[in-house]
Length: 332
Ligand code: UT7
Image 1 (tube, protein in one colour):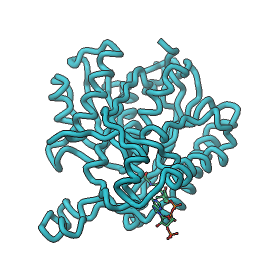
Image 2: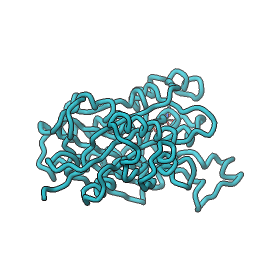
Image 3: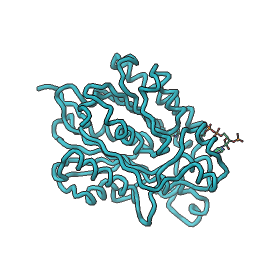
């Protein structure tokens, strides 16, 4: 029997309506459009407004669109994995909530947390279920309501993040398309540079943790930047070398969108010209687990069967990794 690969057979991305521009941020904190654009490449980001609206809203919209686009009935789905750092609540898993919202009843589901590399880690995890031959339709969702853990008095972080969701369908492919190779890493000693201190079991919520603003994301930007540039570039080059790929062989690098300068450095190390790199950070900011699916969604109309694609990410933890895949379908 020929080898079973896990292939992406559909993609959908979703962002809420409200747009938080650099101009509005200039009225909230001491910053400028010029600083944000030159240091990050971000112009605007989308924010999910409304009471009690969590990441499952973003994920469910993405999954609804995906089911519609791929003509899939919720009953056909075997497994749904959600990558997020902003689950609706600590438990139950937001993946369960998404399944309930979209009517997926014959599947099992779980959340996966690998910070900004979560979508990539979830895709690798999901691919193993498909490659085993046991699972036929697996959905991977990346969704984060980053505005829920962003301190809008901290100019070093509040300009970076946005809210979004994205979802892909993974199915078996025996013609050589789909995920060919992956490499993933973690280094827990990096946890001191990017974190949310309180709200978990080590520091449960108290009046003190709230007063100290310990439920918000904190980052030592420069330190993370250095690790991110090295980690994302190294693993992307490693993926090329492992698979004997030259820059000419690669159609697109689809990188996590944290900072334009990190993306540029990775592309340079890979020898890729700008046209081969998918970039939409300007419109969405860093949406954590949604960046890669949002990019795939935005570039879907350009992707052709057989295109060699590299996905790469770096995130808190630290976590980082890369996937090499052969795109499995032509624009519809
Ligand atoms: O996705 C998960 C992984 N995360 C990342 O990959 C993020 C990695 N880090 C970064 O992208 C960058 O470090 C940042 C965009 C967060 C910051 O850029 P930077 O070039 O590293 O700036 P910096 O932290 O070195 O700060 C430079 C200056 C400082 O002022 P002084 O000390 O030089 O006077 C900051 O206080 O810029 C100041 N600054 C700002 N000024 C205007 C910091 N944030 C702002 C701001 N507006 N929003």
